[in-house]
Image 1 (cartoon, helix red, strand yellow):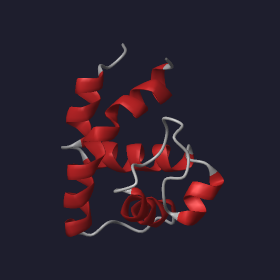
Image 2 (tube, helix red, strand yellow; image 1 turned 90 degrees about the vertical axis):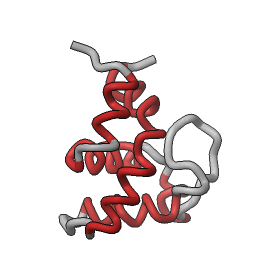
Image 3 (tube, rainbow, N blue to C red; image 1 turned 135 degrees about the vertical axis):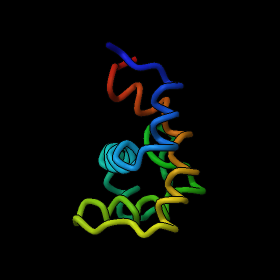
Length: 95
């Protein structure tokens, strides 16, 4: 059953597993130069906003290394990830 964008948004703001998985999924779909620069370079509909790029890239890299996020980092993640629900919906279901 396909989830709605709103359902995904709700999960991203309340479930750390969803927030971290979504974080890594978006990070992995950015261009290589954006990952390396830790900033938004291309307007291609995928990746972090310019405001979020540096901090969320650092969180994603921590997560990929198997390091946990601190409680303050989790709070930041819960505040910032819901805006990416639409991107995650497109990555999961196309469109």
